[in-house]
Length: 359
Ligand SMILES: Nc1ncnc2c1ncn2[C@@H]1O[C@H](COP(=O)(O)OP(=O)(O)OP(=O)(O)O)[C@@H](O)[C@H]1O
Image (cartoon, rainbow, N blue to C red):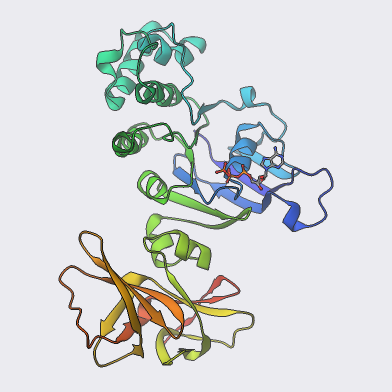
C-alpha cells in the first residue's frame, strides 16, 4: 500500500492553456493517506477520470508531480506503478474458470500455488463467488463477471493502490447495495489504499472513509461523509450532498446575525465584515416550521418520502426545503421557519467562512 502525494498537480488537454479555465484539473496539492478508502465524487465532466488517469499513469499531468510513498512516479508508465484497476465494464477471460481469472494476477507475480489458492478462496468468499469458482466465466451474468473484475482488482496484497472507475455501473440496483457493502468489508479486512470514482453520492458516502468532492475541475473538499454533511467547505458540496441538498440563500451578514428577506436570524458564531457574494447555507434537516417565531414562509407542497416529509416552501421568493421529522406537526398555522443557529453556515463567493465562537 502507498501514501499518494499530489504536488501542485494540474492538467490541461490543451498544449498551451491560456488560463485556469482551460485546465480540466485545477491545481491540487494533497497527501492521500496509506490504506484509506477515497471516493472521487462529482458531476459528469468535473475531472474525476482525468485525476484517476493521472494517478494510474494513463495521462502525464501538464504540471506538478505525483509520488507513491515519496517516490516520484510522474514519468513512470502504468505497468511500473504497481496498481490494480477495475473499470466500468467487466474485464475477464471468458475461456478461463472463475478461479483461474481470480488467480491470474497472483500467478503472474509468481506467487506459490498454496498462497494463490488461499487468497483466491478468501476473495471469492467475500464476494459470494465461491460456488462459481470451477465454472467458466463465459455464460455468467454481467453482474457475476463484474464481481470477478472486482475480485481480480482486490486479489493482490502488494499493490500500491486499487483504482475503481464507476465499477458498479453495469450492476443491477439491488446487487449494487450488496457489492458496496462487500467492497467496504474487503477494505476493512485487507486495508488497501483505494480510490473510487463515482458521480453517485450514496455510492461515495457508503464506500469511502474520505470523500474528495470535485466541481468544475477543482477539488472543493476532502472530508469524511460527516464533514461534508455538517461542514461543507463550498456551497456546491452543500447542495450536491444530501437529499434534498442544503438551502443556499443570499444574505447580508453582520456580526452574529444574517439578514434575509423577512427578517434577521441569529448565527451560532460572529463574522468579520465579508466581501463578495454572501450567502448562508442551512440543511433542510436543521430548519423547523413554527406557528409563532421565525421568518415568514409560504408552503408550496409537501412530499412524503417514507420516514419523513419534505416541505417545499418559499422564503422571500427563494425556494426553501424543510425536512419534517416523522410525526412532526404540520398545520395551516405553521407559516414561519426557524434555523438551528449552530448549523447555519456562512459562505463568501461560494466558500465557507469560519466565524468566531460567541463569547
Ligand atoms: N481526451 C480529452 N481531450 C480533451 N478534453 C478532455 C479529454 N478527456 C476529458 N476532457 C475534458 O476534461 C473535462 C473533465 O473530464 P473527465 O472525463 O475527467 O470528467 P469526469 O468527471 O470523469 O466525467 P464523467 O463522469 O462524465 O466521465 C471535461 O470537460 C472533458 O470534456
